[in-house]
Length: 340
Image (cartoon, rainbow, N blue to C red; front, side, top):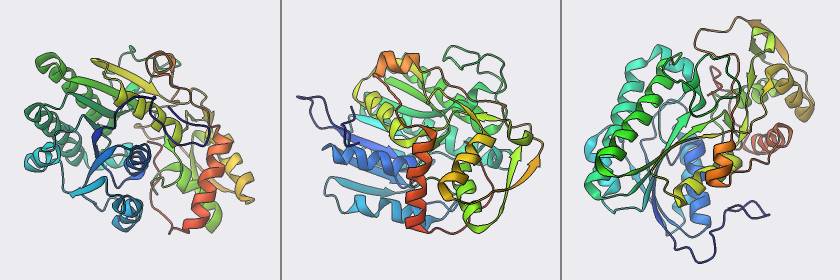
């Protein structure tokens, strides 16, 4: 649960846990590892520091964690079965599998890479967890599994068998593989479908960073469908509340949406960023690629019921926090944008 000061506290009487966090140098992974350490847990972080975006930024993300005696870093790729086995050899109480190849559009150009990392790598970790007797596996999935649908908002029981790109297809495969391990071996597996996560330390290929960076440097911002596409932007602090609750509460096998439940169109999103940065956007309109759904919109009733999930940070407040981080970090301009 989250305290009034934003930190994550244990329920009184709960023991500290040993937790493996994959993708521990990335945006969500490093933020999660820091939150777990902050409440007293012991964390092993696994990351291969690939060059999809700047490894130097990932080193900066993880540097504060390395100063904590309850944190240990393993540098390696969980696509290698030996690395996966090594990462779980200390028998954590739970695995938070955050690491993955992300980005819908990048997956269109590199499908084999997404199969190797997101499908083979997840299978490696599940098998390593089984061999080590790890009882609980929390899996970062994505709202992109819902594809193009007229059924709004997205509910966990909706059909998800028509993904629009290799990235969501690979995440759907991870959800299915998790059920197989639950069925065969009794492993608790919770798949959390993240909706458009943003916030401090956000990836440079994500739209919040693209918009902010473009405003600062006077660069053109591409908006698909004239900015009419809607996204359910969810602040990373709210996402972590759900992830940590899922770590603390094995549920057997569950799939749970983690979003804000209030999608806004991209025109409104850019306008909020303009007001925060006090700069005017240069907009280019383009047709949406076939990999992009028109809307993402989470029904979070299940998360509220099972995890006491309660997203609190509005897009305006979240973008203001992102702006504060961005202006302090003064990072270099990124490349192609992604909403997931």
